Length: 627
Image (cartoon, rainbow, N blue to C red; front, side, top):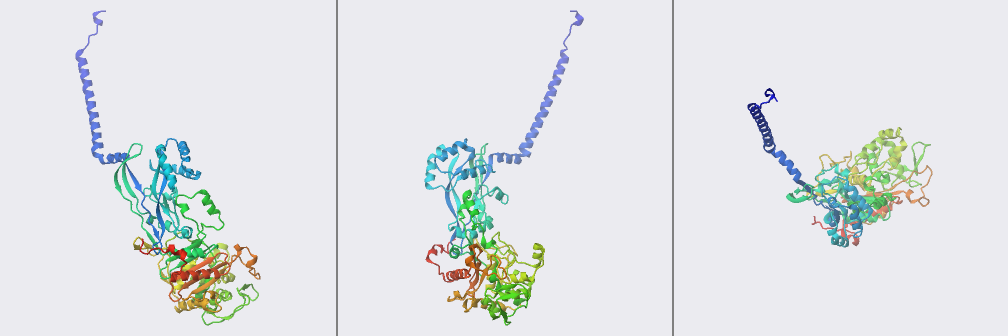
């Protein structure tokens, strides 16, 4: 190779190039280091609290502990809704490798129904905290508890937990008044604080339990726990104990409630008793009832199906939702309406034939007494329950005065303060009929309303509260269940259900009407004269509500009719008549004779006023110093 083609290395140039690269790399590394340090400074110093919190969130979890539910007492300190400790079989799903194998193993130890497995599997799909146990079978017997405990070592994820559950010691007679709690559903969680109810087993569904849910529930406890990467609790860091729910003390008298329920016998019906001095509900009976304990931990399909399919409708609260024609129990109120608007007075006499006609050639509206009552006045129309008197009175008044006056007693609207789900009944008007039937109001419509029939429908609680207002001579209380919440009187939202006076143009009419109702019992022609002989005076009014309409010349023959077509039997009353302590409305569905509810009411008066209960009700006496 020639000399001119030889390549000579330029070491100086290479050295400069290498140095340049090293310097550039050093600068780059230094810049990256500065960026990293800046980032570390930002994360560790500037954003320290934020990322510390995020780290804690991954390591620390808040767990709620349901509080003990408040108890419910009657007026004498008897516990009507209690908390009872039970042992339940629970499963932690994350610790179970093979559910099919677990199911097979458990089936050889304790009986678990298909519905219990189905309920468990459905709750597996709902939102829950990791490693939160789910109840598979509640209320284990001592024998079942012992069997499971022996084999727990080989049942991965299975444990027996002690839990407090709701218990109703007196069953079906109180079901519609107290209500019940049931297992929390997804829909329930939409209306409550999910965090507070995390781990809670049940929630109030109906009655007092439902209305006062937040009061009875209390405040959940809160624990801060340390968990591992899989969410399993390792240790407890902090703890705030739960605050128990507040106890409720009701106006309800347990002995009166049970006695009234039993006095209905085999009939379906309702009894509502109210203290006219307070508006407190002493008894709220709907028969038949049901065992509320069935609902506490989730009612089985078979049990629920049996309740729903029963022709007697045990789940239907007749006291709050039953719509009945008030029949002749409306007559004292109609009489007061006639006096108030100048369509009646106490001295005017009326010849009561066995029928009434709007027009001379028109339809004959029959009186219950075919031969008529002869010459009568307003007082006598109450004593003998003269239909024709109220036919003519209602025709003279028309529906507008009737509607306006009866609405002052709570007809046609909700009257309850602390129970949900009541019906407003139907107090008809011109406007209502036009909207409903596209027809005007006819005089014949008024005639039927005059004796509490036709379009008019009222609930037992409405008739009972109206009777209580009559007993107190116009002092109207919205009926209420709860007297005390904890150790303080129950309070309601301002303007809600405030008591008020129904003022008449002549206040003496209150006493005159009460006197007429006294004579319903004391007069020899009174329709409730069978109640004579009490050491106190009763004021009352009988009623017979038609289930179907009779033709003009058709006679009612109970013997030829199915029982379901028999008239309803009603009675309103209060005692003592001069200073009432208790007012009662009672209805026997298809009971026929009003003597049944009248006799029931007298027995309730005797029991409540003189503590004259049969000995078998002594277990419900309670203790006023308890609670």
